[in-house]
Length: 456
Ligand code: NDP
Image 1 (tube, rainbow, N blue to C red):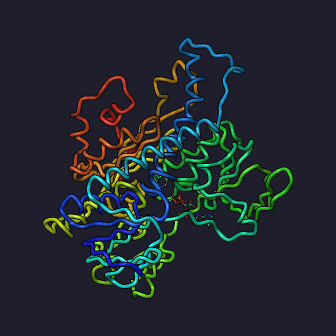
Image 2 (image 1 turned 180 degrees about the horizontal axis):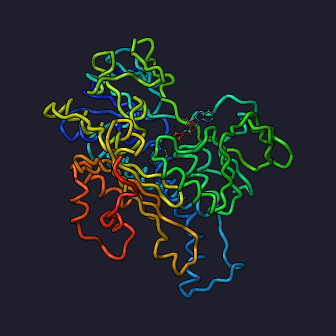
């Protein structure tokens, strides 16, 4: 064992939340170390948001080339080629650049980066390899990891982690799941010309999103050639010479070149030694914390995916900021989880903020629903059969806009601004008195005048 080191804070995990907390705390004068066993930047930078979005751009570029035809450009089909290896290499170079930025950001703030697997020896000691580091406070920010259900042939099923480094694209793929990752990857693969089947165990995918958005998205994905099969799950996967045989719960069998599961993510707490410290866990396997991120052990806090709040980078960033203030700032502030906007980068995108119609009804609101469905202007000349949907959920009594939902190009970009209005408590009258930006799709949000039916 070597010399003990003294820190005020050791953060375990250099993902979005951990890096934010470490950097802000060091900037406030705290002596901070961050322990990371894999890559700087966590899931978001390495195998999540960032490379996913780059793949979505790559996938959509094929459509853009086709759409240009209606605008006078010609590119003979036989000359259009896609090189998967180049996309992956360029993506990897960008991720490396970001890893470097994260390293410099931490080092410039004075944070010590410790590479390796951390174990919590006690509430004030972290062990990495044969080194013991003592600290006033520990924060666990280790994130989450994909879960693949236990089925025969599970070893042949890839998770999103491996999809980012796939050596080559298959001709056909099966994507298992019906959440964010499944629809995003089904879109990426289909856009790149892979014959894609999505299997979801329930009646309709994207559980938790507004019902109109879910139905509309299913239609749009089918138009793009994704074979959607609901009430269907994988029972087993067999490796054969030509690829994989997937046994589906409805009795059918699919022959495919790749099987990917996007069936949720679990808290990543392996090897931390949380049990021996007596840290309480939730039923879902996340670290149990109070609203100040305090675990059941004093001097140990936890933030990010590992505590089971929304698994979203901006949520982890917000938690890191709030916790840093609590530990080394004025001690004030709480994370506000109301009206968290989110986007799903399927094609077209989904953007959503606030209550869905179903949630608002369940909460007892009498509602006015405004809905607009149209062909985005771009496709008048491109000829593409793509439509957009926008929807406002309005409380009839107060006139407050409770939720805004959209399927369409740039839905994520559009929803961010709407989120400010909804968080500020904007009324439908205020939406109506806002001047639109013409011609955009977004202006529909301020020009929907008639509810789809009388208030109910
Ligand atoms: P989700 O929890 O969103 O979806 C999991 C899906 O798998 C659901 O459709 C679920 O079905 C299904 N499923 C779960 N267990 C099984 C099982 N045993 N057999 C068959 N199907 C199963 O997880 P993801 O993996 O898609 O993503 C994890 C999280 O990462 C997201 O919730 C999100 O917070 C975050 N994320 C955010 C993104 C963004 O902001 N754009 C992008 C990607 C991820 P059911 O609905 O019936 O439970």
